[in-house]
Length: 212
Ligand SMILES: CC(=O)SCCNC(=O)CCNC(=O)[C@H](O)C(C)(C)COP(=O)(O)OP(=O)(O)OC[C@H]1O[C@@H](n2cnc3c(N)ncnc32)[C@H](O)[C@@H]1OP(=O)(O)O
Image 1 (cartoon, rainbow, N blue to C red):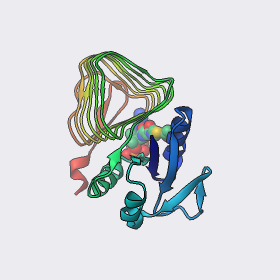
Image 2: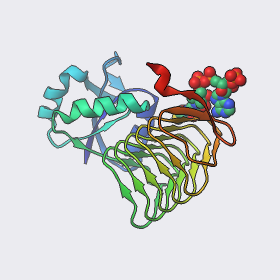
Image 3: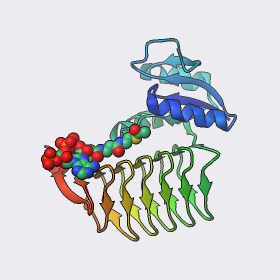
Image 4: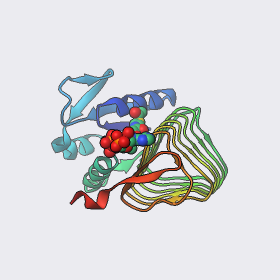
């Protein structure tokens, strides 16, 4: 398969390495701010305003949105869907995927990720380096599990939630949508939608509904 990557930043570098490790062909990258003609030796095809032409030129390409911020990634996905593009996935060959795991389109899994049996991973979700998702978990669309996150069995995480680096979640807990869990936190009980929670045990420090 051949891929087009939307975004030319640090997250894109890692996705490019994964696609290379899988011997996939990368046609080019699209970015509104990157000025050079090549990114990591890959042609820059244009900006978001050029998408219509790019999709016409490469009708079989699979797209990946390489943007770490969950809301920005979702908004770009929704803009690209207007052009009926096809989505890819990027799963590093060192990732271990258990039986009956489902993985949504657009999702990426960095080196040494483990997803155990019967877990569901949503669309356009990031399982970052060495994250483990144990059995029977449900990780929704546009979630980002940072490097070294560990979810025990039966954990569920709502849309667009970001779990910070090295956080851990005990069996069966639910984290709502649009929530942020701080680095190295441990989640010992359910967390609602739209909060920032930190510490061990993780406690709310900000209510994002108050943002206005
Ligand atoms: C490959 C990659 O790079 S993937 C990217 C991975 N990124 C991450 O993991 C980022 C995780 N981010 C964090 O942990 C951040 O600290 C956040 C999002 C939880 C909070 O950030 P902010 O909203 O800016 O909060 P802020 O820095 O103002 O801190 C507020 C208070 O919470 C405390 N705090 C912040 N984060 C944490 C944490 N992880 N654990 C414990 N306490 C924390 C601060 O010390 C501060 O306490 P104080 O009021 O007593 O001084």
